[in-house]
Image 1 (cartoon, rainbow over the protein chains, first blue to last red):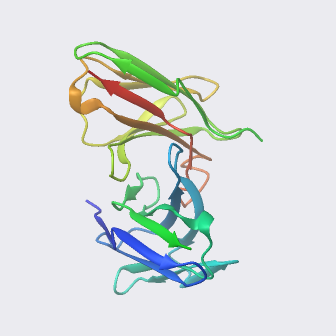
Image 2 (image 1 turned 60 degrees about the horizontal axis):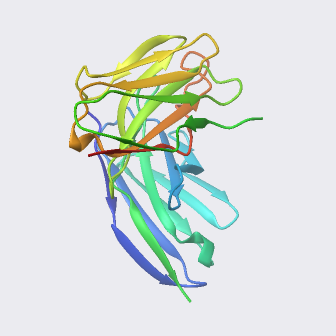
Image 3 (image 1 turned 135 degrees about the vertical axis):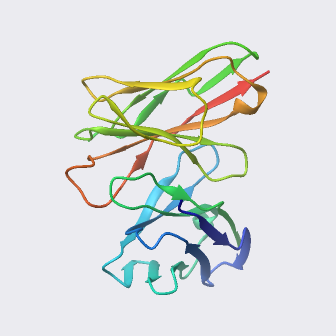
Length: 111
Length: 116
């Protein structure tokens, strides 16, 4: 079955700098790659997603890239702000199947 | 548009008891998935319901069961609770399997279950 690896597990960046989180997946049939942000005491919030027919997608300060050949995908957050501090999860899914999550990255934005 | 809601928010049970958790899906969504999230881990898929039928199950024992109702709300039932069942239980709804090619899911706030 699908396996999603996520790195790093913890990331600290200075406010205003960029943060990058990387994931790999194992099932070449996966076609949908969402990213979720989870704040303390809340459920995961979908912040951006990318589909297998696209290599890159951007939404304001966040962007995702997908390399299908290498089975890698990444989340980039630019101009980080204190409210970006949270746990971020990458995930992978294929049509009609469950979503498989990575183990999460705890992002700390330092003042 | 109303998002995904779950009840209760917190629950404390003792080992061996039974529990029922509830979820109301987002308006227009006919598919509900349940996940278990242990502390410090990513959500783990329990099962999914599509139009009142179970459609896929993760690696969880039969004492984890569910229902989906005609209005697409859902219940998760856990029998014979064990200490390891302590976790955040998340419900996620999506527009539907037949209607879409991509499994976009939206999560509720979760129910924190503590088993003593």
